[in-house]
Image (cartoon, rainbow, N blue to C red; front, side):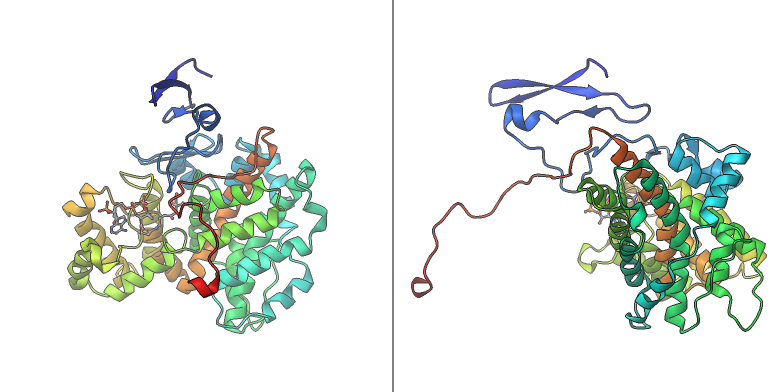
Amino acid sequence: MSDKVAKLELDGKTYALPVLKPTIGPEVVDIRKLYTEADVFTFDPGFTSTASCESAITYIDGDKGELLYRGYPIEQLAEKSTHLEVCYLLLYGELPTASQLADFTQRVTRHTMVHEQMHYFFRGFRRDSHPMATMVGVVGAMSAFYHDSLDINDPWQREVAAIRMIAKLPTIAAMAYKYSLGQPFVYPKNALSYAGNFLHMCFAVPAEEYVVSPILEKAMDRIMMLHADHEQNASTSTVRLAGSSGANPFACIAAGIACLWGPAHGGANQACLEMLKEIGTVDRIPEYIAKAKDKNSGFRLMGFGHRVYKNFDPRAKVMKESADEVLGLLGIEDNPTLQVAKELERIALEDDYFVSKKLYPNVDFYSGIILEAMGFPTSMFTPIFAISRTVGWISQWKEMIADKNQKIGRPRQLYIGPQKRDYVDLRHR
Ligand code: SDX
């Protein structure tokens, strides 16, 4: 706690607001007592200048293009770690020892199956339902099955709920995919890795053996690591707000999945690949650049721009390298969509509009190209984002619930509606 204060002059009075110091990043002005002392609210609808909580999990420096998970740079983790090791790091704060990682992997592996009755939920959906619609429903319904991990005040039940979510989201996402294909569900295989098991559940069929490609397994694991957590983004803030009311963890994660689905957030990877395919060829890029600059078009370059990154998104850099590597290893480096993406990035980054507004490719710009090369339809891109982000959501949720000072989230407003007035009978209107 520093003794630095910010002074606010209002209506002839001066208010001293404490300034809190972070480990790294901007200091924050503590306004918790402002309303009671000065009878005013602050106004920040998109939370562009607002810190909603204290957190020790992830740090982003938008100017440096830096992303740290518990202090470790994402580039180092993407190169040297695995998604399950990153899950341990995000959940518990430190990199695991070999025995801790083996135990954690074993606990997750042994929770990958879902209650057999959950299969019936899928039958209530149309086959052409978006997998995100199915996932919101089925993940929310987990609270109807796992009653022994609903008590948020019991640390052990919180731990079990966290393991269950990390373990079962891939199974549920794969079931949503299989259901949309009209193919039978494929059960988890404990001998496979986390990423390998997900690929197997998505692409195996009873009629023949499916061998997991090490190239795709490594690429999928890296994609999961890159999407694991990202400070107080929209879906994480949704999970925290839902959790602040005491809602059970499965309901909170279902709320996060619903928020992630939006094209401005996690839905951007699907929207971005669909945009790249609509552009189709390099010669049509100028037409779309012009549309993105035309305020009246309502069109935005999907996969571009970010609330925090005003330089480059470090995840996009790793993803671009991974796209080159994976497509090269698959022998499709001349993939037309990848060529359009690279040329679009090059042209946009030389255009004053994008440079002046500090718009760079974000995590969603290249991920879809890799996922399509793996054989996933665009409708599965956001479910894969949700699988990955589950550990971030649940880690942030656990951090909030364990904070003895946490309160229910309840913002106020700037009211611009009518003054108080009396009811008018119908015959006088
Ligand atoms: C994710 O928060 C997170 O951390 C999210 C995420 C995570 O890991 O959780 O990183 C994942 O959601 C990545 C973002 C994916 N979304 C997209 O790719 C959709 C396209 N991008 C945008 O809609 C937008 O850039 C946002 C939503 C990502 C950020 O929006 P902001 O910070 O609110 O910025 P803004 O909408 O106020 O835009 C600032 C200016 C505007 O122009 P002016 O009104 O100032 O003239 O930049 C323009 C915008 O019109 N702009 C774009 C643009 N993004 C912003 N113009 C064209 N194309 C774009 N993509």
